Image (cartoon, rainbow, N blue to C red):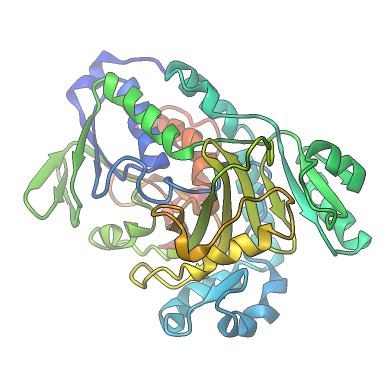
Length: 427
């Protein structure tokens, strides 16, 4: 439980970024008695937290830098609608990041990075439960596990997937086709088998989790300011935040601005090798009188996920490396529907050309080459703290990240070893 400390109330802390990570940090610090100002240029949960897959993916403990990706790189440049796409025009800018990404494919590095992810994910959901209870938003978290389904993979390949997760300590069951269809009757008969991750969860409205946790923080006294922080400068007693219109002075600052953090840290003299890994989602309305799915279902071959939402069904996934400035390629969102048609039988009629505003979405996942976030105190600035770069796992790791930041700022022992997440690994 968070313990209020009255002596903290004379300290003003800014949290830059009002996504799920920043909101959790602000809530934890405000609960500890600090006076917190949450700052964001767009609004509460308006970035990557808005329309993600809603999957609390604690089973995802393997770094993205896998050696078998090496031979696929040429194909990435030639297939703009493939599961992973690399913009040819953006390639020169992305090369340094990919160089580090390849370096992290080494077996010893993958092993260490995987162990760190496992530690961070292990109890990530349990950190959310008291927060959602206090916010009277427990219904926003559903614990029915998730499925990873296979269409045409060999039995040997499926067994290898299963053993990979099982050996990593993940709670997983290997299901045949009848067992899979018993859990999710509306899956296609194309499905041959599945992995059932029994201890993961999902939310029918991930944006609403942001809203409700932010409301809880505001009810405790947290303030919100809509502004874009352009520059951070360190001073002896704290930090100055420069926006377009003013300079704001705080005792301490938490940078939780995701893919946009690179410039802010550069102003403090740090290197942050972060890339905007663009993910797409497509929202479908419900089918009449049909429960399409009751839990997230991901496709092993097609590299996308379907999650039941309050509004119907959300299709999400794919990876695109094209930076922060290129226009979204919504054909990638349309592709998700074509994939879903092969995996689930109950889909509404859908025409991409007549899709309603807001049905298609693209967000910038903040990805670092080792698949680990940055959580900790800035190496050369004792009043600046970092909580960023959570790639696909921002929703999953939000609450535990907030707890760790609170422990760091109050100089308490952290619940887990945060050494692997320090910014110093890049500087």
